[in-house]
Amino acid sequence: MKKGIGILFVFVFLAFGTGFAQETSGGDGLNYVHSARTIGKGYLNSYFHTRFFGKLGQSATSSAMYWDVQGAFALNYGLSDRIELQLLPIVYQDTNRGKPGYNIPDDLFLKMKIGGLGNPESPFRFGLMTFARIPTAKMHNIIFEPYSAGTAEAGFTGLMSYFGDASYPEDSYSVHLNLGYLFHNDAGNKLTDSPGDTISNKSISSEITYGFGVRYPFDKWDITVEFNGNAFLQKPPVTAYSRENYFYFTPGVRYKMLRWLNIDFAADLRMTPDKDQTDYTFLPHLPQTLPNTWPDWRVHLAVQAFILPSSLRKESERDILMKKAASRRELFEQIVREQKETEAAEKELQRIKEERRKAEQELQKLRKLLEGKQSQKKTGAQKPEPQKQSKPKP
Image (cartoon, rainbow, N blue to C red; front, top):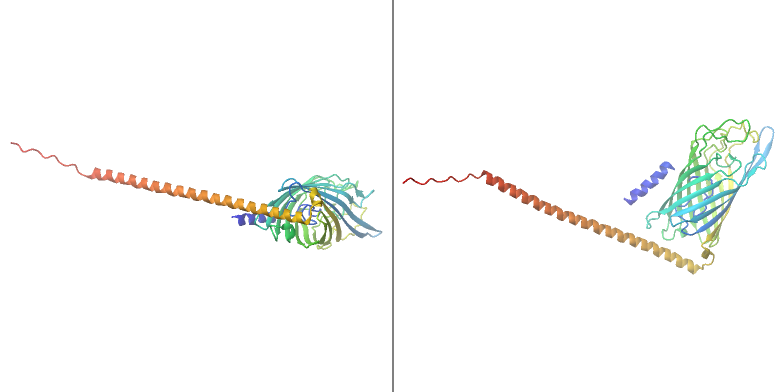
């Protein structure tokens, strides 16, 4: 039954589909792909992230160098052992449009993860994340960046993780799968600031996004490999950038400088071919010969710092081992509790079965007793009454 529920859970994710797979993960996840684990109750960590890309764009009369630099940070807080909240503002974003040519700030992302679900004895963990994009930027529809409509957007993400060691998941290799749905809420929305642009989206754009990642830990280094991509269910209007489906391969490394401080380095490599589907009729400030509005490559740098609890910066190796042992003891106690609950349920079921068996036996006896009385009545009714003998006359 439990295996069936797990298979059904995975099937639902595959059927319905990481939201905002092109935004940094933070928390317990990789660069893009989220983990189904939460960071734990009362924990707070920060993730300072930047990525950049440069490309030479040419037209018939001119050429220009276009840069796409983004700076963001994420704050992840464990509201409970199962619920994690994330605040992710993009602080700086190049726009390559007009003056000053950048957004400060850009949009704000809000996320809530319900994670750590599953049998504690199993290496699999499951979770669900909901998210929203709040349009706080001045300009949207930015080239080399994921499509944004300039409206409030929302979606959900299914999370599944597999850990080589369920007792010490942070010390073992792990595999993560994210599948989600993104709703752009852009019907009737104009996408550029060009006065002559009268094209707007007549229907709501939506897409399925997905991510797959593996982490292999060493003493001071972690190696990560990720894939992420999308598939538009309803494409944005023709004046939108990044209308093409994308698929990226992202290898990376993490240097664990201190127990509470990690440094990440990764690179995006686009695997999908050059294919520009944007209509530049109303976009005269950009060259019309860009091969693709998704970056060919992109470099990531990030620093993760654990803020709470403050004891993380003071604990010795012995304290960490003792805490891990305590967490494993809690896991064993949970398993024992569940085992006892299962045994109690089995005993209760056995008692109910015994009561039912006794009731059936009593019912059988009663049935036989009633059948015996009915047969006696029938026998008595069929027996002829004895004739009275007349006395002889004297």
